[in-house]
Image (cartoon, rainbow, N blue to C red; front, side, top):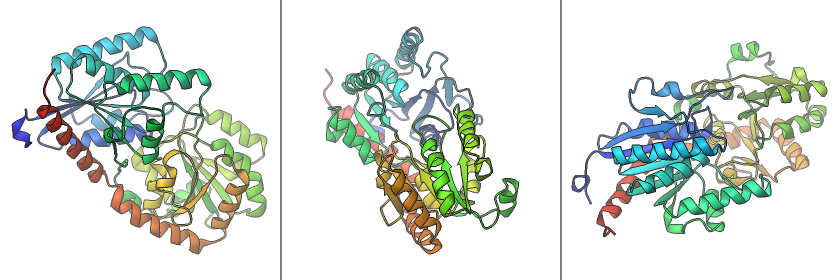
Length: 400
């Protein structure tokens, strides 16, 4: 069905819990801003409030009045009173604005947004799985709760977008939806700054990183499940074998003080550098300093840090968690190691540290893959095509 056969422009409302600096939030912001350029779409974003040490992406919408609405009652923690008010507010908003599509992101907004859209009889309801909302990383009670909530919300979900095939497989294994309801769309980003990333000697000097030091970088919020402890725990053995290593943590978060104290207790303050909070556009400069990127998360969809590092020509080492294996290709773009396997991680990191030719080989292959699959425009175009297909299908179905 051509766009002229249903109402144009298509009204699309995205909903996310908050706009901190993080992969899911950057994906959502890029999607909304990119789709906003499509003339047949009228797009807006509803987000909960953003505050704290993890930064904010709200400024990205400053030049687009009306594109972003902040809903104060949409908060990350489970707070029944606020959650009910957020649900009622979203329902009323959808009833008044009558979007053709509601597209939700993150756990809390994903549940409330989809239920509100169903109550308002929105024709197409989409949810992006940026990372698992349930799994072995949780205690039994929250794991049961989130799994049950996702199953319940799936009843009113038209389609799921997964940033990694691993997310599709995990959700299907949990009896959430059916295979025809899933599409994998990689989380795109602006490739050019990463492709052009260089080893900025002035920045190295500012960060007190010597020219001959081998920089092992990690890009992630300083928070639980992100794997900073694994790298810190491995550091003493790594430095015994390769004293020229320097560890660069890019990002900020509530665990910063705790991690600094742990590093201090090991007497390794001189070997670790904290970048502090960076806006996304600053990340390529810091990636340019790195020789190796490590990603040791225990909960992830497909971490943007991995394709970003490969776009910058850097090899990667990752725990074999969720979607990491879809971009960290063993012995091709880097090394995958079993979650928590410090011996394997240490061995692989030292292998790369001592072999600049292998680092260059992995980085070159990574660039080839990322150029093809991770451009922002490809992500936006894939979402746009999905919207048109789902709305066309909805319009052709008999109404109950």
